[in-house]
Image (tube, rainbow, N blue to C red):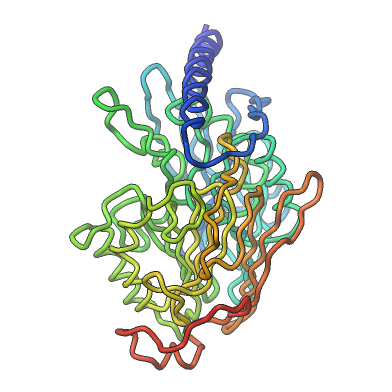
Length: 449
């Protein structure tokens, strides 16, 4: 009976999803930008027992801890425990956590478990099991010192292009994945959160995924369901308390000499907001001697020459850009626009050698397709732009230099289409010693920053 009920509700959700998708397609015909046809949707089934864990993923929790998250059927009593060790099938430590759940109209999430494990050794492979049964998983902790490699990918969704992007990401080693919003594209159709969790589990269970929210995570319906981020906050809690934030929608973390700030495009950010005050305090607390690199992620881009989503990040830019500039943030990554674009270092719409480099990377594989149309002639601030699916790799080599590369999805191959070396602003003489109250006199246009 329970299985029939799940099938019934799933069919209703999929029917509504297809209907609304048709409306989105009709609406897109009136947009002033063109989207390339997306790949087919991918819905991985649950092949495990209802009592076994599924949708397993991990995230960083402070200096030497990891949060393990997974889901189980609500009708089975499954303990919120993780057993782990450094050898396969030998678990000498057990950690206990808690579970939560939520309802969205007729949909029930089941039990969503969260367990923090540690302390853990850096650069070490751990084997673990969730809930006392089911398959064994493993992950490798990030290193304690440079080099450190991030994967950056936004607007993933769950299409054939998404599957291709994930395979390309997995083809080379990395330490942490950063996702600037738009995860499942469930858009109120909650079973799509489950299928997304199953799709990314082979990757998100082996490396920590650090995410922030996008517009597709909001999932409100005026009057009927006015509660934003219900599924996102329940399924993907991030270490916001560890960075003195009061919201899962914005937080920061440090890893191997790098400070990473995850900002919220869809919560208040003006000068009177909690996010603004938190960001100012967070930036002021960074020791650039111990932590020479600072990166920020946001969903709606502050700089964008694509015709899609023009100006949607402008109010946030006006509110927060000066804080990032004065703190000498090295790079700001964004999603939302379904294309890739890399800008020079910028402050206040001008090339500025001591400002952040801006990168839009909302090309993970979403169901809406690519945004093909860019403004012409191109802005001199935009150094590389292309509407293709893909992902980025940020290799922080040492205290002074990092390498950025963007890898285009090209059928079976991942092609490195854009790359550059750049220097940390904390070690750039004219930036680290200059009074940060005013822009520097020099500008930067080169592909090596």
